[in-house]
Image (cartoon, rainbow, N blue to C red; front, side):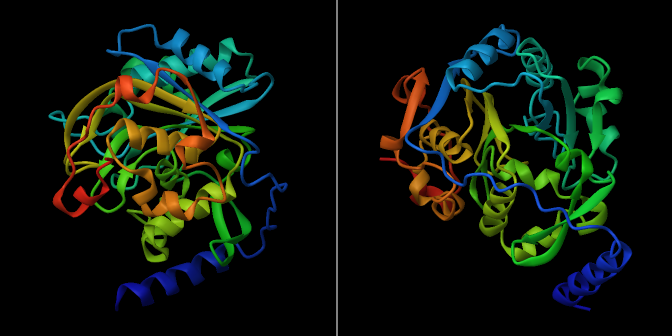
Amino acid sequence: MNRRKFLTISGAAVAGTYAGMKLQRPPKLPDGPAGNSAVSVMRAKTYSDDLVSRMVEGIRQCGLDARGKRVLLKPNLVEFDSSTVINTDAAVIVAALEAFHALGAAEVKIGEGPGHRRDTLDLADDARYRAVIPHFESLFTDLNRDDVSPVANFAGESRFYFPNTVLGADLIVSLAKMKTHHWAGATLSMKNFFGIVPGAVYGWPKNKLHYLGIPESVVALNRQFRNTFAIVDGIVGMEGNGPIQGTPKPAGVLVMGHDLVAVDATCCRIMGIDPEKVDYLRLAADLGHVHADRIEQRGEAIASVRTNFALIDEYKSLRLA
């Protein structure tokens, strides 16, 4: 049986299992931000710096009001290798928990659905999430195995299933890792949303998204979920053959903003990558701002923190002049 037939049959089986569930149609939210988009770049040399105050300042610079909101923090937890830095650092998650509580959020939870490892809590142990993050197990939901509900018209599909924890959040915060990617060029706050697709429904490593196409799936996910904010962990990123087999690259920054396209475009420029050459950012032009003249940089200037990330041969053409 080839892959296309397998995905078609498995999708039909899933649809049959949940056929009686009511389709959710989220309220229509504006696609692209009006005017310029604010993106805050804050210096942070190490994970022992005061990350909470930097996050609070950056969030305020971007005009986010978190008061009374149910916040879901979505880190990038993929795989573990002690010789490199694959995942969002636990210190960043701890700081985000404190920052959003300080800003008046009604609830702050953590959710992730790793694309490679099926034992999510075992992976969280390896990444020291359970050891470092207070009350981790009471705050964390494995999005691969959460209860799901269908939404209509996602990526051309008549129905597509998402975790109820994601659908019930007022604000989804993409706590991405600043990394290169051997298929997409760069993986940042937008690509991080692959982890909200439930593996128990769509397989590992999220087979349905690869079948639809990586750039197309990145854009579809960000079109579906517009109640978002990003805090990208660039304190130590990954260069070269990312997102798993690359090498650590200190960039010394946290990058934040409402407009995930603008956040990722800013991250790319910090990494020495031309965002206008990254496929999913070009496809997402209706969702946010890619061009530098439509992004209002706050905090540090890009030129003061730029550090070129090494690129594999296939993506050397992405280098920013």
